Image (cartoon, rainbow, N blue to C red):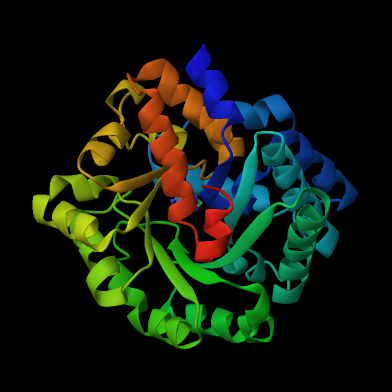
Length: 326
Ligand code: ADE
Ligand code: ZN
């Protein structure tokens, strides 16, 4: 299939990727063994057979369990390096990745252990392959505003390594406004801001992310399509949506890949991009996400180029950095 070959060969960016969501079962068992941590699942196959989700929370329960074997700086380095080398082989040239510090702090793993491991891998990828990156610290929205502020305080010695902040975890019942003051503090520090919104949550949460928080990007955004005024607003602002096709399928945000709204988003003039979210859990990395769209929908060559171009324009690279990829 020539479109698949084309999608594989295109230089791509990844703007929505949780590094803890790249934890492949094989590597998880290896790190568990060396850290002498016991996993609830006894074999790789047992673990993989649990990867059937009916909603976001189902997945998150497993995701937090999986990351619990990460203890030392080298674990975070190895996890990040495995991901970067995988997507380097898929012609991903720039990544903007999330990490979830609170998912590790709650287990007694210090902030500096986490960020040092991740950041060193990002630097090595730059050295080895010229791959560029941004690092995004994400707040867990099921936790309190106070906990988010504590996390931000721990991050302040590392502001040079951080480009932005995000908001993830259980969306329903945890609207963006809950973290308004935290995000204001982050913006005052010069950080970019993004938030998961409209994955499971209503269009109202997307409105809040835009108007109350003032996000620079929207992660997912699927349910924004339920509100025509909101769609017009997103288009008018030129906000990028970091859409995740395989994630949407696995978490039942869409019932069938055939009905994925990404082409509709493009047709409406929205800056949709293709991303992999938690590839180890959702059945594939960047190229698999493109391949799923190509195989299951009528997506054409011009749309594939547009998605990749949107990924460059929607990144937090400078204009001159963007120009080198266009
Ligand atoms: N954490 C990791 N992946 C996530 C997703 N798709 N939505 C919300 N929180 C997440
Ligand atoms: Zn996500």
